[in-house]
Image (tube, rainbow, N blue to C red; front, side, top):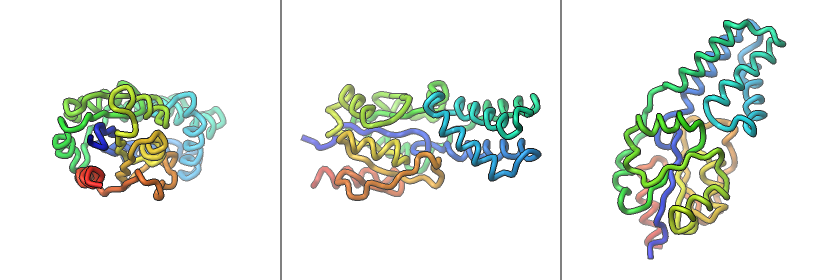
Length: 234
């Protein structure tokens, strides 16, 4: 009996680029408020708003855009010009149309695993945006199931891997976020394979569970098959 029968994959910054577009949008936002506050202060207040609003708006572009508007109102003490609000809405909409750029080794790896494991895309964020990116990536047919969730925690992974596969103990989660993809998957009983990305949102930073027996780290998805071979032969 194979030790792993199902593999979950994160989407943003695991399969395709994402954070770089948020960084560019934040740069535009900081420039818009340049007459009211220094750039570092604007970014700091925006991060505070994002952290504060996660429980209400969730993850994704819409919540990010609302946090930018809220930050602009706070920094200007309610005096932000209407045209500035309009520009913030414009750069938020631009995020919803950014191109989908898949990361190295992604397509080849998924094609090699397809048919040998149950492949599940597990991502959080705006429903429409994640569906758009998956469709434009051309990777949709390589997955057996897609789960777009409001948050990722141990309960999420237990539910998904129990519903779709042979339970978390025979599943693996692959992603670039230790906080969302790796730590909770391991807590649920699954394997967690961390694929670092050069850009990771600060609110996704936690320490790696280096001592966990089911934790692995690879440079890119092209190394995933080697991890699977190692686990199977152990």
